[in-house]
Image (tube, rainbow, N blue to C red; front, side, top):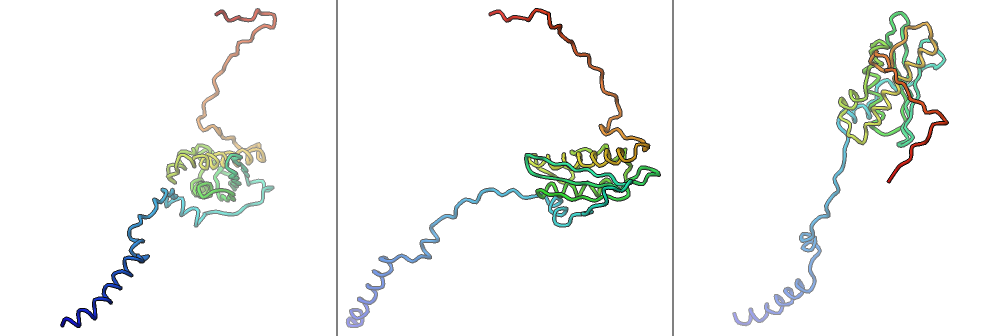
Length: 200
């Protein structure tokens, strides 16, 4: 028995020395903590739905009498929107809407949602749409509110273009309130009036 211990002792000792002299990669990898991942912002599922499956994409003939075209853009972010409406002249109802948008996912989603929203509305109703309605429906974050503002500007521009082609159509108040602007009187100074001096 003593001989067997002496015969196996050198082999066990060499295995122990090898394992301590060369640490394995797998044991090292277990002790390293993974680097912290930065928080990712993601779009809301409604934005993704309108971005991945945009509704009413296309264009109409801009020279047609019953088509109004609105082309708006935001130089700060590079988004450009073209919204076109086809109007039934009998009752000023929007019968068809098309859009083309070059921009981020929120801009595309805002355009797509707007086209679904205004189809079937009268021009008066469509002119009252606010960007806050679009932003709320799509759950847009504050940094993407300009996309919903573009959509509001686009529909108002399209309505305005329709009225410029059809001057006999009943005009809509694009401000959406129907109230008149307050009269503001501006005080004018005469050129020979003494200038006010500041005293210290």
